[in-house]
Length: 116
Image (cartoon, rainbow, N blue to C red):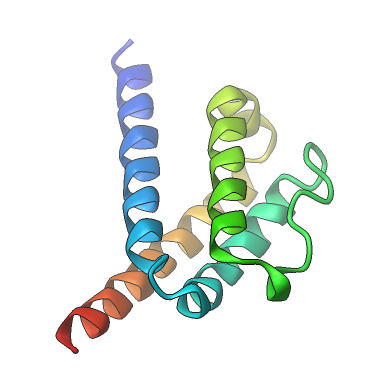
C-alpha cells in the first residue's frame, strides 16, 4: 500500500511541477514552444500506439493549444498509469531522464527570465 501511495504522490508532484512550470513559461509562447518541444516529441513517441497523431506540427502550435494537449496527456497518464508502467518501462525511464534534464533547463530559463 505504501508503494501505491508513494507512486501516487510522485505522479501528483510531477504533474504539479509540470503545470507550474508551463504556466510560468506560458507568458512567452515562443520560449514555451522551444522548451517543451523535446518533451512533447518524447511523449508522442511514448504514446504513439495508444494516442496516434495527438501532437500535430509543433512549429505551428500556440501556447493555449499546447497546454490543452498537455492536460490531455496528464489525464491519459493518470488513467492508464499501471498499464504504461508495465508495457513501456524502458521508454518511461528514458522519458524520466529527459524530463529531469528538461526541468533543469526550465529552471535555468525561469531564473534567466526572472533576473531580467
